[in-house]
Length: 376
Image 1 (cartoon, rainbow, N blue to C red):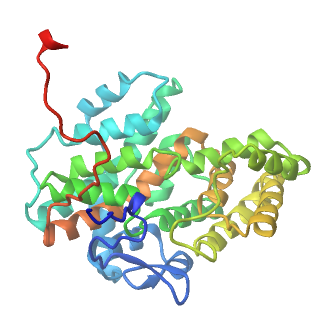
Image 2 (tube, one colour):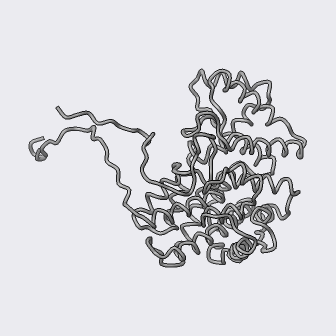
Image 3 (cartoon, rainbow, N blue to C red):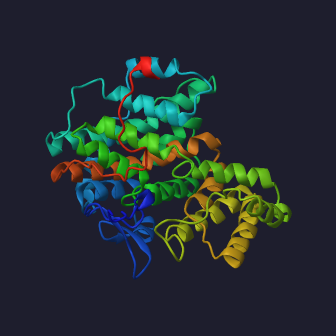
């Protein structure tokens, strides 16, 4: 009798490769990028500095950062051909579908195959980093029937996105909270979308195809789409007085409650305190404490009754809402940040590649003969 195979569903607990990009340190429960705790990066760095770190392995000095910023800002415009495509997207299409298509369109502009030089792929990665915010903001304005706002090269990465979406840059505390959210979302080891990206890279496909696949994976509500689901949940609850009863009923009905739990963190997501502080600051700035109050009730209940901690999506959803972004933009904003991590993993996979091709345990019908049609 054949020995029964052990199945690791969802690859839970399976180590498939090595990476030097990021790690959750068990002794501190801290997510680190290239060895730096993400909460320290959020406290002391801009998103541009962190993007440079993720791409290159070290934080930039002043000269390196200035050159990186110039290069990114020079690549922000998307061109008339892509603009014409975006204008033809169905107005009811989800922004995750439109940004996926826009990124794929970039791959049409050049012949790009995997396994090319690191320098060529870094140039393409920087192009993606610079153009993805422009594509998202352009699609947003077009869907709203508003005049498109071109990118500006005199604004920071985060300032420019607000400018392209709303035609103005908000106060510095709002921009800083947004910048911090991008830092926290930039990278997270072998999560679903990053693993998807690496699988595509392992076939020697190009960085545009790998990024497009990453976006498709991130769209799911069990991954990146959870930040949108959190805000829909908060709006459904409405007030803090209804929060506990809502949660009790949701759990009785075995409803999936978004924004709680994580496959990696066992004692709480190390990114949450930093984003929670941003949410508190934004609530004071906006003079709106309703979402914070609802979250307090939900978090207290889940910790006391289930010992389940919130994840990053829990505070980021209402934070983006207070910044003025529509809910269906939350996951595309996640894309803006995570393209840095995807690209770094793409570089890493190409540097020491082996085709990712797992096995499966067959559970279907045993081999059998085909019966001719006349005999059936």
